[in-house]
Image 1 (cartoon, helix red, strand yellow):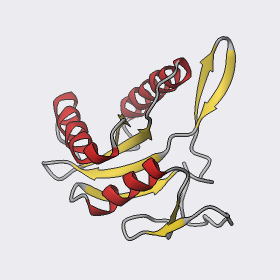
Image 2: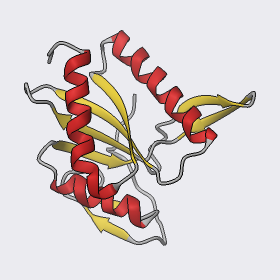
Image 3: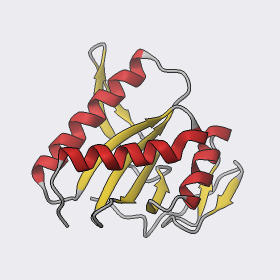
Length: 153
């Protein structure tokens, strides 16, 4: 378990102020990630989000026998249609590699394990390959979570 309460770091990258994030600014790592943050700020489905930068939220995975850590791009809290919340691990990708596929499989396995535990809310993963279509991706994640799990608080 972790918190965004003590996030403090310096960067030379461009930063953008936030309203829906627990962290006051989003560091721009790419134009795509900046566009995603822009759309997260404006989405009516987004309760809150955070860029996974200096948060130490990692998901272990293995590739070619080597143990590695996957650092997803964003953690997003969405309001589902019936009022409960969905915690979404959001990855922003243009080009997909074998390593990206291994990360996604590990994140899906992680989400299933956390959901099975039942004590940390409901989690899902989404990969955004088109920042302009993020709204549709968020709606799709909400719809899929409703089919996978009965409503709960």
